[in-house]
Image (cartoon, rainbow, N blue to C red; front, side, top):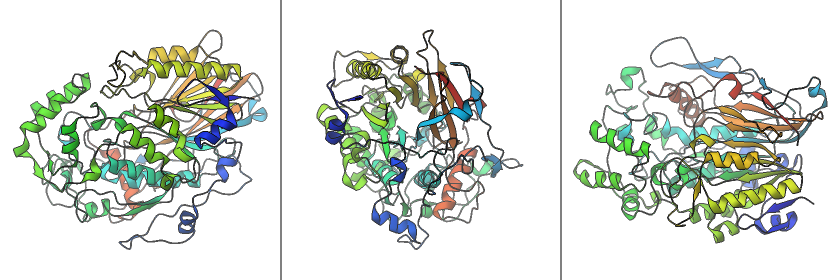
Length: 589
């Protein structure tokens, strides 16, 4: 019988015993697709609901019943959001589809495989949702001139955009190529933006269902930079000709009131699993946790909204170079500028969450949704102080979720020795059991260069992407390493002369344009090869927007259009054609 390893130790257990102990689920073909939201969510989805403010609430369509068949509708194989003709602020519309590209760097694709193939598993990857508490005092929007990621015109709509992505997945007709049922959704980190409890609550409700008010501080009004009167930021409700309006951004009356209004997520109608990212673990996504000053500042009543550009440039250079991992310079800058700060409403809900609190929140029955309990995490993780685990994808196919965040600080990642050795034992056991393995992490192999010591494990070495690549390549069962962090579509072959080759699949974020998720299908071609089909999907919001439509769906559409027009946004995040919709062929071990 195939075996599965404990999340906390190297002990090998019987699979059923492990599942019973951790509350995970064993997904055979079709089981995940059959699961539905809790009864209350199903009732709301079946009819027409309204929010407390009287505006339409989200209602998820049921995924169609079997029999399923290959399809393109609702994927980028049918259409992709693209700019319409014009200049300045570009409006979006329906653009041409992205074709599928066959990649044979790791194995030659053989004729007739389409008629032979059988589906092994299929799942959806979310990554870098970055659900943002846009009024959080610790956010450094004033660094916008240094980095486009410091503040984005669209980010106040991140929750509406994420709910629309859930809507899209719920409406998919199974897997696009094989038509087989989707097994689960995996989110590969940076689920939150600033390690804030508000954001964690919103993320869990987006994924498992619930009502969300994406607001903190004053319950009745917005208090962030977009109502500051500062020209550095888009002031959507004001006549002020700010820097973004000078580039063509519109005035949208009622935008801020709509952005903080209650909305509702139906929750995924598939089981979902969670992987942790640096923004989930570190304040600002880059500073070592546990600083009492930063914690007090996060929940307090002062917020810095403007900063001298030279000071900002020096501050960001330290962040980018990893020279201030504990945030000492950031802390001193905040202390020195108290007189320049504006008053905001204090809010204890903005406090940073610890790793243990992150795990307990996932294990909370209120956030189980379609399951599994804990979404991959278990009490064993809490007891051991770990955030990595294994789970059953399908018979003969094991999922491995890693924690690549470095608690010592900085936004790049690494693995500690204990986790690396655990991964090695897991891969050896899978090889013995003749299982295939898919590895999930937040960081890519190229962004695991941060070898700073973990303060909780003094003396333990940290290991970078090159070492992880070598370990994965040394074990025949590995098919793919699926990750995010870079906010860019990128698919890299990792060949080995003895056939121990695998694909690294990195997917664009859902906060920056093009705002995508990815469906991955694993098939046996019955000719000595396997294929991984990757198909990109957008949220369920229409490509065209209407500035007068401030409903939940209208805001989700505007979220995409604003992200396309965001000043400083990178234009290469789509990747090349071979990084998008693909067939990735590899030898069957």
